Length: 243
Image (cartoon, rainbow, N blue to C red; front, side):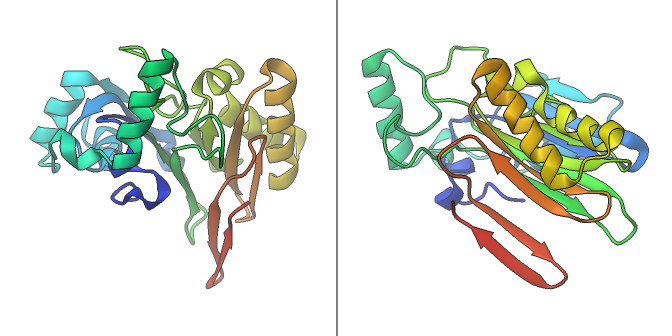
């Protein structure tokens, strides 16, 4: 799974505690993990929770113990650190501030990695993984592992993965909100993405973005941040957007 390279500011650039959900619309299944340290690929843990447990959401030591029971690979803390993230953490502590795993000035990249997919039978799935915010309070959990806030999938509407300021996305249930626009208002993927981001800004002056694939396989994205890097694979064609 994604998050094995620092190029997209994923696992090796994230803090040693990670958060990840997986939402699969076939059988309306979901799995999520939060505050997990050492698991190399947290999305695989979310999938194991979804497929091999009686629960949806595990956290902390319980989630780590379940990961070991399933034979998932672990790494020590050094594996998850890059020089850039160490600098960011040091600077944040000096300012006694929290940050989105990047400096407040400059490129303004967020650190979440997400994916949405539709298979040939029309089943939809979404996964999101993040290291949280830099210098966050102990015990803080953002939107990414919360089904309906940072991740959502339902065959009748769409699959969605979000990124942004977790508190903003939690307050607006952003992923579920976008899905409802499609299911009950008949919006297209692009219309729903735009409407959800408009609501995010209007309600909480939120910073965030999302990617969608709807039940027809149409992909869309929208964001209120300076940029959001995405890639789309459809009908054998790969398209990359860096802004």
